[in-house]
Image 1 (cartoon, helix red, strand yellow):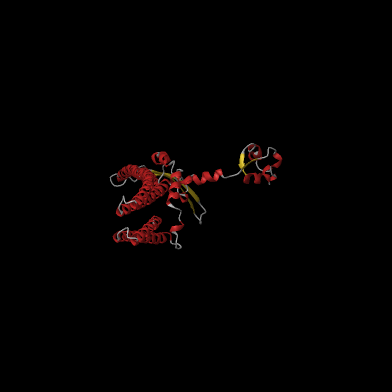
Image 2 (cartoon, rainbow, N blue to C red):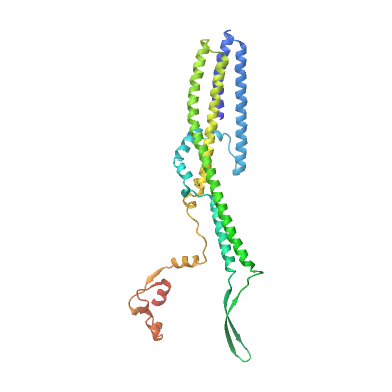
Length: 349
């Protein structure tokens, strides 16, 4: 925005120099030069306010990132026109992603999903408490004086229904909580989708508005040049020329604000859709599996290396050959079988 104010101040300075010459020559009244000076002061105040906004924004950004920026950082940023062109190119496929729920995955919805799964597991645990518990117990006793040994094996059942079968009521309450969380997830999903679609409409609206403002600025420049020539010819007043310049400046400021709105909506869409580089797009689109107690065992089984045992019985060690008959043919029983390398090593030794 500061670039717009600086360009407008340069244009007003040109008009001021022209009016000074006309006043010295007695062609124009001094009040017209005073009007020109007043317009320049107004632009300088607006320019100073834009600088203060920039300093406040940089201070807030420094607090957020915990780092300081060098002087002139804002002027090192590419012009808004280039940034908006890049945003429009990258947002070509955003409409499909916004309105296609299959490609949408938001952290809020994912959080609700895991809360539902947690409630389901809790409900299953409370449902299991409604049934009796069957247990097996083995007791072994040894008398050190008489050296007598005695062992007992027992099978029992335990059932705790709770006061007035309250465990059944707790299980039903857990099921109701699951249903409540499902509805809460649906509400969150709709809210998130509505917010994203609203931001996308803001982006599209700003993009369309930019086109009309660009055409309006081009027309305003033509009007200013025409009014300037007509003023010299005596067909337009100096106030009409300055009003045309002000209208051109207002349209330029509105164009800058529109582009800033477009960029803000674009970056908000990227965050909500998980398109930012730090969000790891290829990972947050994958479903998260729930933990299962047997998962570590299955993982260990799949990571074991298996080899084929030799077909010949010559590799059977002598210790195995001297074993009882039901173990002598171990190599034959393991023939064409898949066994771990550790067993293969023991057999070959």
